[in-house]
Length: 221
Figure 1: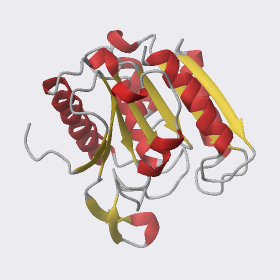
Figure 2: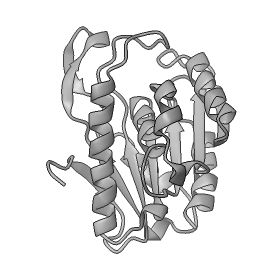
Figure 3: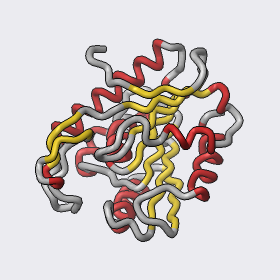
């Protein structure tokens, strides 16, 4: 494992479970750390939360401004060109973080990949292709990138993985229809998706945190 991403880490050194949680475009690993105290599930005191910082790169949709990003975005539209090389680079980096958690004593089957917005796209992409069984995938306010490639690249180990997807009905950043299409695609291809919608924009609500806690209680047990 070379050039591991820098992370913000919360939780015990001798954890039995891990949640690797990716931030959205332009944020960093500190973005979701404040949510940890708000989560409530049985094995929380045995769970390590790992919040990686994405690399910096120019982002086309933001006039080429250099910021933390998991991949470049030309436009948020299902017909827009996709930075597949950037997505696959991030997939490799998250796979390295999973391997690091394995070295720390956490089995892959006890690891959740979580992400918000662009980070959610990466955990969907990575988790459904990962070669070892994972505990679950949490994808918030996001979509599934390059879905056509998933048909041939999907990992048999994670065909029946539990997927938590949530989206705001009034999201002005990632269109609700794009997330809805991703959910429909996954369901159509026989994935187990727990789908939630909330009266919010591109954010996270307390009710959503409650639903996440219930889901974590189920998959990290």
